[in-house]
Length: 343
Ligand SMILES: [Zn+2]
Image (cartoon, rainbow, N blue to C red; front, side):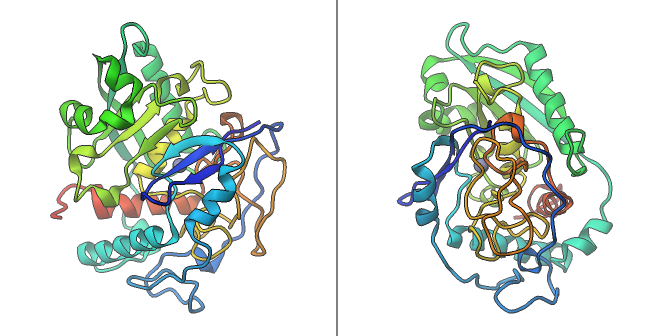
């Protein structure tokens, strides 16, 4: 079975990932074919209109609202802010390329990656919001979430090792029912008060996000303008062994932190280049629903990456990041979250 479909809130800049009908657990995703149209490498030779070089305008095909509208009929939301319109995605890609060039003189992720092979250990400040006893997570539950993050990002669940690890740097509980039950509404209050650390610290909040949405996250490109809002919010029932049916293996945090690290949904942009801008996640027209055994919705090579953490499957369906997503994460980290960033 699996989990969410997408809903774009077109009037806003945010979207929602939605849950869907279920299916049985499918086989592991097949090896994916690299598509030139999704590369983000300065100087890389790619056919016009398919590369995502710095400053390049991305042609608009279907817009995010159309895509989201279709998905919205299917299920209920998984996360907010994760879905972007084509224009928003293009702006993010362009900003990343420009920032990398400014800092390092190149936006070529391959060159960049070979120069930085060290494992990245990210300190996590975990903030549980609660209403009395509800939402008050045990230390073991929080540690379980950290362990799940490390398993997913190291490739132990079946995907590539992204080179990212997580270390719990602090855990606190705040008892305030309004924040707990309406985290989106009150995030501008609790985030500035509770957050610790700087751009390289992950502030992870748990709350009763809702029955339709599992979590929401900021993107690294947003840090400049709203540093105090930086962070990830997940439903307290989505942690490993939580009570959120089909979404209680801790993969909501894996997915949302993927956004915090700069990854887009694998179905971003549908079949239209540059999609999610990552070279080894095949295009897909629609989010995965439940956990399909097989899905191939775009004419480009490669089956839909239904088991990717940046898709919308049930937790039982999610298991992998790709090497390209790992490279993207490390490039984004260097651009926006590494020490010494002046912007
Ligand atoms: Zn998402």
